Image 1 (cartoon, rainbow, N blue to C red):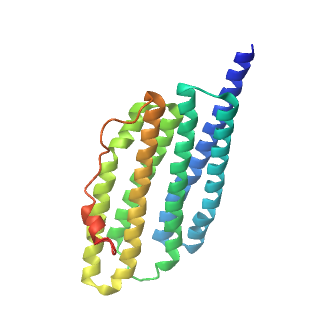
Image 2 (cartoon, one colour; image 1 turned 30 degrees about the vertical axis):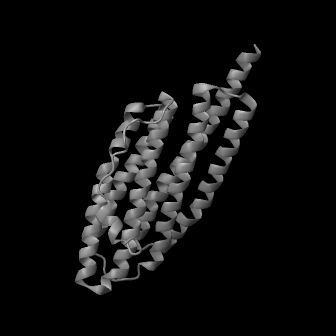
Image 3 (cartoon, rainbow, N blue to C red; image 1 turned 60 degrees about the vertical axis):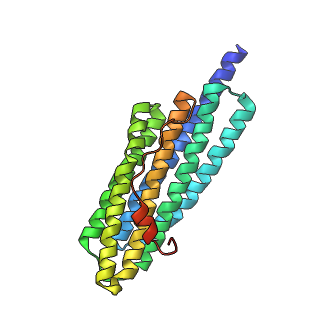
Length: 239
């Protein structure tokens, strides 16, 4: 009877961890969308909301970590049960980093004071954001459902995001060379594009965590990455 009670208590702890991760994921998804909306619409108030939301994300990550450590101490889980708890902690760390990246974009809204606002660049950034936000949502659903094929689809999709990022970067460089007055605006968009690309990397990390939780090992293949050399070499300070 005691072991049955322990199993139920462990399941309850695990459900609470999963619920907290889902809550954190929902917050972060909203931050991604709102940070880019704020940039596109030059909405400083929305940008500030995104920055403020990061504190809530950080607090949730701390709660998840504390609950996870407490559950390990109390229940002393083994094998797959332990991987579930470690998985929740790992996903929370990636979500916290995604929150930081969205917050950084929210902070840039007030810096975009230029009249220069080419639709093509903004559309490129929005398209990239839609893709990345879709990847984050898909991988969080895969985590909640223990759906390995869906997690692996996210893992393999990272290359497409890298390609769009590189293409957008080339466009930005062109605009900067055409008119020096565009430089400040383009630099801000460049950093935003890079932040979105890094959010995609964190979605890929979560996919790797799902693989670890289910299979009990790391993904044996090398992570698919697009060619970011053009991007990296052109960022000031990277030469």
